[in-house]
Amino acid sequence: MESSQPQQQQGPKKRGRKPKPKDEKEQQQQQQSAGKMKEGKKAQQPSVDEKYTQWKSLVPVLYDWLANHNLVWPSLSCRLSKLPTRIDSTDGSVPNTLVIANCEVVKPRVAAAEHISQFNEEARSPFVKKYKTLIHPGEVNRIRELPQNSKIVATHTDSPDVLIWDVEAQPNRHAVLGATHSRPDLILTGHQDNAEFALAMCPTEPYVISGGKDKSVVLWSIQDHISGGSIVKQNKPGEGNDKTAEGPSVVPRGIFCGHEDTVEDVAFCPSSAQEFCSVGDDSCLILWDARVGTGPTIKVEKAHDADLHCVDWNPHDDNLILTGSADNTVRMFDRRNLTSNGVGSPIYKFEGHRAAVLCVQWSPDKSSVFGSSAEDGLLNIWDYDKVGKKVERPSKSPSTPAGLFFQHAGHRDKVVDFHWNASDPWTVVSVSDDCDSTGGGGTLQIWRMSDLIYRPEEEVLAELEKFKSHVISCASKP
View 1 (tube, helix red, strand yellow):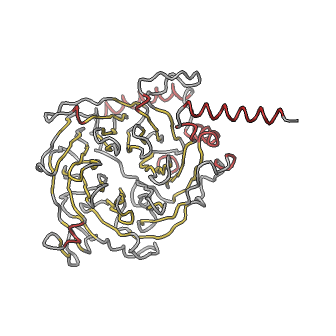
View 2: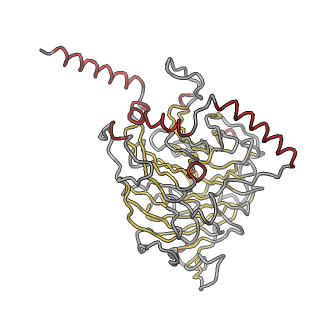
View 3: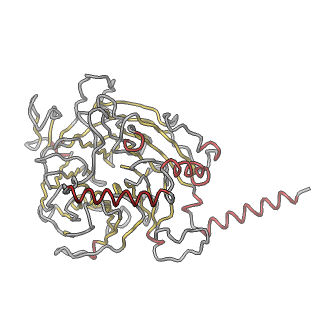
């Protein structure tokens, strides 16, 4: 899924707080210093286009398959659902839309190497075909699907409400100027201010959590709407927080307070629908348990050195939590090492980005592998099992950060979201907001790295030896 907005209305949405105002003298000093640094680095660092050209030349070697899909408008979110494989997206045309597309994911070791890198950056991919369009009431900042039923999705826009959509039941719409927006199937109310980014759906129950500018985390159950009773209210036209409130709404099961600034991201514990965590612009990581109240269970006061943008809970090991921040780092916490008085250090700090980290997600394919994307245009793939292990590879740069084993550099601007495909191993969808580099639009890529990169080294060497023997055998035949 992706999210976007017409350029003529406003630029891309910025994550986190606005920078504090600086006095004129300080600004002049910083501009002079930055100018000198840029002049010194021009000869050393290749341009974005040069780096991209280098990456594209290596695509046949690094990737088993890759599809590049140009988007007319900037995008903020993307998802690959389970079955059938598809992408729910917002292409940002006027009006804002939520587009469900069928995606043909090529099987491993099928795509010809010479064809993988032969794509036009300005064209739409033949592998991605639009299936249905919904007209969304406002810009879509975040999209998440219900794991138990991927046709049910939740969206965040610039309002206090969370919108729930049954994308199969929704009628297909034509995105023409002046068209009325699609009617959400359910509206989750409870925030007192806009909730723009922090959104998650529970892997075990039909629960939703959200965070917003009101500094709170709100929990709902979609099942409450189905159950009926006083918790469900049918809105009359004109009621609710804004014009999106034209349909049934559900009030929260709980409102959790403990942050001192905007909540930027939330995640459910994979083994409990009652436990979840959140991060925010107050640099805090907070763990919650709905069974014991609406206050923090554990609060790490300074999880990073700047605003926190993203968090994810390991689906294979519910003790491990990842966080990403404006301090350019990803940190991994073990909740067994955290205490209720805010004491707790990360078990490791991953340093491989040159700008703010916007998204982190654990891989569904290996418990120690995760990805991180950032404003530097990179999507890094890490394996914490490799941290601290000596790997004797002369070709590997000594400056490579510990644990980093793959770097997707196919985007030329900030990678605002990505998602591992649980149905196709080691397959990822990623999206970039290309406003700063091209003046508009976005790029959606679906890709799978070569299995020679992530398979165990001894297994790869054995296969290469087998191939070498086969070549020698063929060459020796009369």
